[in-house]
Amino acid sequence: MADVVLVTGGAGYIGSHACKALRAAGYLPVAYDNLSTGCREAVKFGPLEEGDLADRARLDEVFAKWQPVAVMHFAALSLVGESMKDPAKYWRTNVLCGLNLIEATLAAGCRNFVFSSTCATYGDQDGVVLNEDTPQYPINAYGGSKRAIEDMLRDFGASHGLNSVIFRYFNVAGADPQAEVGEQHVPETHLIPLMLDAIAGKRPALTVFGSDYPTPDGTCIRDYVHVSDLVDAHVLGLKWLEAGKPSRVFCLGSGEGYSVREVIARSREVTNREVPIIEGDRRPGDAAKLVSGSTRALQELGWTPQRSALSTMIADAWRWHQAPEYES
Ligand SMILES: NC(=O)c1ccc[n+]([C@@H]2O[C@H](COP(=O)([O-])OP(=O)(O)OC[C@H]3O[C@@H](n4cnc5c(N)ncnc54)[C@H](O)[C@@H]3O)[C@@H](O)[C@H]2O)c1
Ligand SMILES: O=c1ccn([C@@H]2O[C@H](COP(=O)(O)OP(=O)(O)O[C@H]3O[C@H](CO)[C@@H](O)[C@H](O)[C@H]3O)[C@@H](O)[C@H]2O)c(=O)[nH]1
Image 1 (spheres, rainbow, N blue to C red):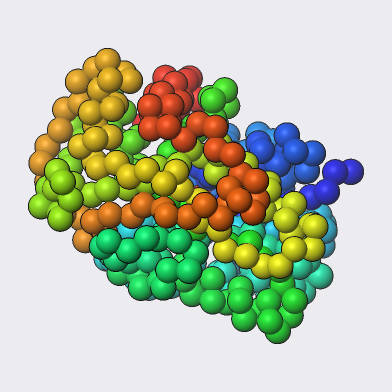
Image 2 (image 1 turned 180 degrees about the vertical axis):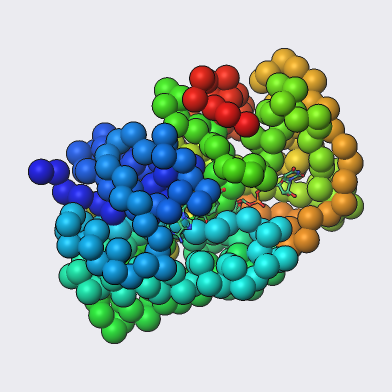
């Protein structure tokens, strides 16, 4: 049997794309998911083990059954705005469940752990280049909870020999170019899918959250990276660990920043349709600008993003929005 990788959150947006990439690379991805925000239909490239990360007995059972060579940990709550309203939910689900998973991983004798972290751990650092050495000062509970797991991984690395690759993603966008899987959050809160729904008439309009940020057009700037490129980096990260290389942090972004208004303008060009918009207030917890200034993944992992041009990401997302599987 192929080497098994346990993919927590394998029924979610990024986890389902990771399962596809792992399968293509010769691994058997076993998705572990409670289907709270993910969908059963997105688990197409290996088996689904339904379970909650809070359930240690269920985790132990799944580890014993599949004996994975590595864990890829995507399962989390990840909405900045929600984390500001209900921080306990974030500390409980992301941090306590993360600890549970790390302990189950070690108890099963597995030592390779790939973790989804985020540039939201940096907070709002105007004018600072964001790379792996930048100090992290999160300004929302989501970012704080992710930084806590990063700290845990360092501690368990020192105490128990747990080897980890921590990926700090910037904004993940786009969809599988074959449209086998795509972005399908319920409820959807992310800019590009909401905008495409508004373009398609499935929502009345896109609300622009704040136009008084200290940026050239007043809207927030983000660095968008294609989900297929992102998961390719995960396979490289897994191979890094399998080769016995040391625990390492990598930022994953395109290095290009686009404002909300620039994303809207590009979507108009790609879809050739108007984007109905409403000007709204700022969303609590949003940093003005988050753009990667790192080339470490390119240099050390040999990562070569193929589809992270903004137009390509929007075109791939638009194709997925028109696929029969997509439901808004
Ligand atoms: N989407 C982005 O732009 C982005 C950027 C930075 C980091 N991330 C991180 O990437 C990871 C995946 O994000 P996504 O956009 O695919 O989210 P998602 O909501 O689509 O996927 C998360 C999956 O985890 C599952 N899950 C949640 N809590 C669980 C629990 N307690 N037990 C078992 N399963 C559980 C959900 O059902 C879902 O399938 C997250 O850790 C997120 O913080 C995402
Ligand atoms: O209806 C909307 C939705 C979003 N935005 C803005 O668009 C930008 C991007 O927002 P969104 O797509 O919700 O992503 P983020 O809040 O930046 O968070 C994503 O990107 C982070 C990294 O930057 C990850 O950590 C998170 O998990 C992931 O959800 C932000 O400036 C939002 O204020 C709007 O103006 N209107």
